[in-house]
Image (cartoon, rainbow, N blue to C red; front, side, top):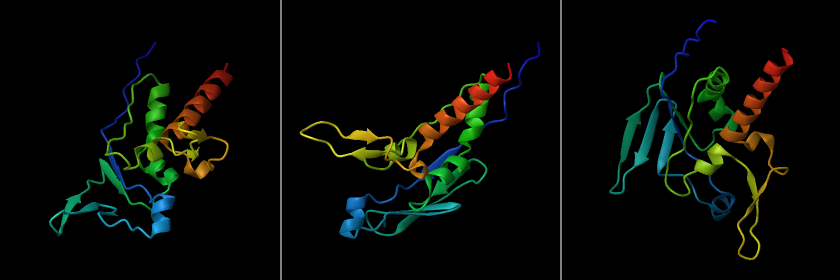
Length: 154
């Protein structure tokens, strides 16, 4: 048998600002510390002013709080990673950031049912709109579809 060539892949960095939470919107909060443009991220400094960081379009992408889960998934090329996995290669996606920065929203995207009597909130899988789903459920769906397609070939 032939050998499979590794796909031409690179490390891709995707920066994202999560949308405001419903309680933040209800209070009238605004996202003012971070402003994202397609090729630049602007960060407010604690002593005033802003620091700006250029984004290399070939290896990175930046998304503001208005970005949809689907757009983030597509622009970060997650399907390419899943395709590589189905061919036997390794792939990793991870989220990094401080508490409350949107890692869980980006990675899973599920709605949660309120916690009751000191218990943890429960994931509301059935009540989560498909458009809100994050990277993990989208990648798992793609992976299972690829396996099913391969199995149907006989």
